[in-house]
Length: 295
Image (cartoon, one colour):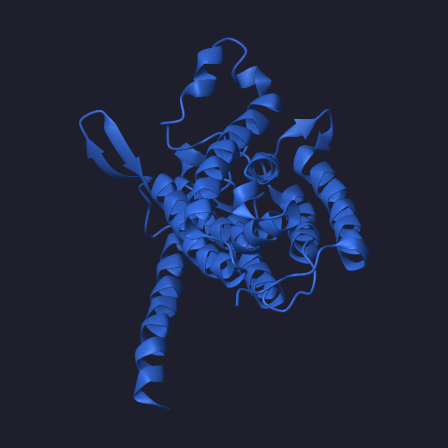
């Protein structure tokens, strides 16, 4: 083993070992997490917001290399990311509000209070908000030289990495956990954070961890594909299929699902996205534009 390889792998191994023992103590209830990182007067800086921001930054850095490799300009990429983040946040909030209207009907101004730790956002709103942003940007910013499916490929390649990081914000907020369980990897949730009707239970499924680990795998698969794909759209379609399969099966474990009547919104959306993903991959295979690498 070379010295360079040791320097690279040693911090990763140490981080994994530390994370394992840290999670073990948290899941056992020996360490109680504090969602707020820093308080300055009335201002609160929460771990969740920090992790979301970190996910966006890391996704941009990876996406930047991929975009430049395909001949796109960094200036145009920054513009697109700026527009995408705005549309993504708005979409995430509107999606949550649309399926949780009872929480806002008596005080609609609560919809605009984003500073409360970013609670009340939904990932499917991010997805569709970003898709709309990419469509508008590629449609009206012709100088950028990017096609719609090229833009969505770049976005969906790095999105699961950002999702994997963001799910740890749920962990630090004691939210997005699953139903009670006695499995060895069960997670202790303090009484103050337990869902109504589940106060008598102590241990729950760590669904944030299930989805985070799956998203890391999806990111690695898509990262490998995007550098070898022949036509735009393949990464977009595969993301929709892979992410939605996991979300469909993880969602029934969660206690905080959004609903349309008796149907879990995330499961219904996952089914739609799986069919849409296959349709996009078929279209890309037969009619998608070819990928051109920068000279």
